[in-house]
Length: 248
Length: 321
Image (cartoon, each protein chain N blue to C red):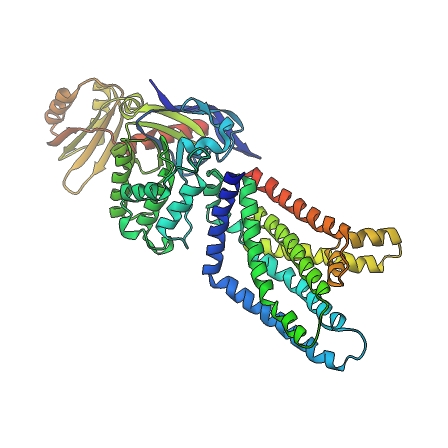
């Protein structure tokens, strides 16, 4: 096991070094924090005029909901190159011929992207600090929102990794990822329009938005954990199958 | 005879395309074996199959007596592979890249005791990469990039090294340097070298395999193959005058397969392709003198590898039509 993890670690550190040595991650992180920061600041200013509700409903919940929307673009931008660029540059052959298994390649790439997402999320920790200065103390909701965002990112990364394994063109990978994520979002809208209760519930269950909203409101549901982990496993398994074909 | 690689009736097909059609050949241990063929002949597909990157549709590949299909990720123990497109990370420094390749190729039993730095230093010295070890691969010349890719293929110290068109796209100086590097590898490794530069084969290889349209045309020592495919002697003469009526006389007198006539400003160059190896040099030169052709030069042509390769692939293409 230690040897297996060591192999993952070698590829993971290479990926992290590559990412943090390129300006792409910094540009993406800066754009992300500027956008989310601007939304947070706008909500903070607007909250002065809100007489009903709490800071949780007027600032925390909308900020995290917006973060989910932004991650629908940030995650595919991060993952689009993971395997497609390796295919395009033929470096995937180096990995295939090495001692690394397909799972080791997938896990290393997955965690390298997750590290970058965590780096971006760390930048947003300033928001709760600002809120604490105004006496905000509902840290349970903040923690569950962050937990939900991490789980959502993990799901999006696994989806992005899967689409990246399908093609050597990262623009195609990006487009497929975004459309798949939009499709999941539209499931909630479809659920709201259907008159059939059961179909509505099923559609809701398959949408990431439905589960994510639980976390943002501080309601941790076991089936939401199951949903996110199943989502991740499904797409990571799909990536494994896709890499296994190797008929380039 | 000990063989490093044995291919037995290997076929590879994709929907609608038969890339390899039951090819079989062997590579002797300790040799540089040339794998020749025009573009699209199936060279890279064959090499990918030998290295374990691609599974064959049917047939068997044995590397040092072991079946490649059964080895899965273990082939790197025996094979160092430089694919057609060198797998280089352009944003990495040469030393970092070689260290990374060494680490991801470490075997479980070597993991604790293996000295990665020592191994990388040795490879850097063998491939003369000392000058550029601290530079980004993306900033290197093509020649040095190719050296780095060859170095990566050698990090596991494999018994067999497969090089897929290692000199393609390089300038003449880099080509010579890469050839010297390949020759220096011969002492420690069996090398399978794919190329369509025929001159390279004659300089480096002792044995060759020729592939065309996914089929093996010939395989064995270069000289034997030349003998097999050369039908007869080739005699080249230069005369002052020549007329077509003399042609019939020579065709009647000698066992000539074909005659090439190349008119120059002050002379005519005649190339006689004979049907056999009979020595007719004395008789032919006398007849050329007696018929007042004005013999200026007479020599026997050694068929070079380019014309010989052209001859056999053309013949195969014609057979297929």
